[in-house]
Image (cartoon, rainbow, N blue to C red; front, side, top):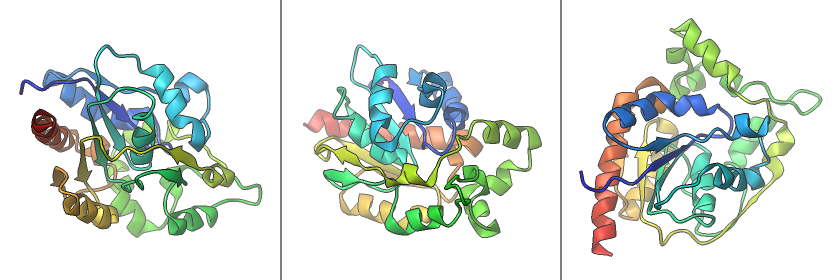
Length: 239
């Protein structure tokens, strides 16, 4: 594949950057230049939702425009980040497709209500991996990850502890839909988003896995990213 821009992997803010590491390692082994900026480590805390892309922009300094790959809530973050740096494509992985522009909260109304139901009296949330029941943990991939106690412990150590008020902020999203974009679905949570990507004619890969596929199944996730990159290359060539 001649089209080999740098890849910037952006993690969902409720988990650590290490969640991308297995997939990043597979992509590097295939010859890709991959960056996994760790905003939480650089800041010492989880920045506000409205400021996440500013923090990522400070950590990413590249000579050529990369493809941004955002997982989970980071699908919105990469759309916002695209207004702050040159990019040649976006790949959204198992998350919502953001609106074309405007003020965007983290997740849907129903998701934020679900989050609020998990807050303690002080508004503090448990670690993300403790949200929900057994069925949700299975769809997320937490149960699969828990088969390796060391891997689960490392994953849990990287999770930030957020307040429920963190979800009250909004990102003021600039227009981004002119950027070539693709979508990878890995869990049943995002059937609707994958359907929307197909409706838009985006390059699309559907995987029957879990939300944590980038952590649990890096070979398959890396291969899907390469497929989308190849299709985005064709889109960029036509334009």
